[in-house]
Amino acid sequence: MSGGNIGFTLIDRIIHKGLITSGRIGVFEITVKDVPGSLHSLTGIIASHRGNILDIVHERFAGDLPIGKTGVTFIVETRGKEHLKKILMDI
Image 1 (cartoon, one colour):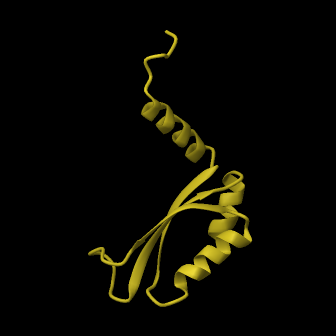
Image 2 (image 1 turned 180 degrees about the vertical axis):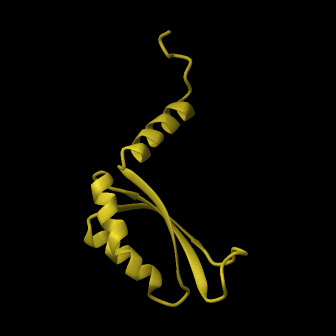
C-alpha cells in the first residue's frame, strides 16, 4: 500500500497527465503554409504570450497534407487553461 512498487515511468505519466488536464501543458497542431518564416511567426506568438515551448514536431510529408502545407505540433508550458486559450486565440 506504500506505492513503492510504482515505477518512475508510471509516475512520469501521471504527472504529465495532470499537467495536461490542468492546462499547464498544452498540445496542439496547426497546418500552415510551408514557406520560410511560418514557424518563426508561430513561435513568436507563443513567446509574446510568455509560453514556454517544450517540443515542436514539424511534419511536411503526412499523406493528408496538401502540397505547400506543413503540420506543426507544439507542446507548450503555460500558466493554466486561460493562458493556453489566449495563446490559441492568436494562432
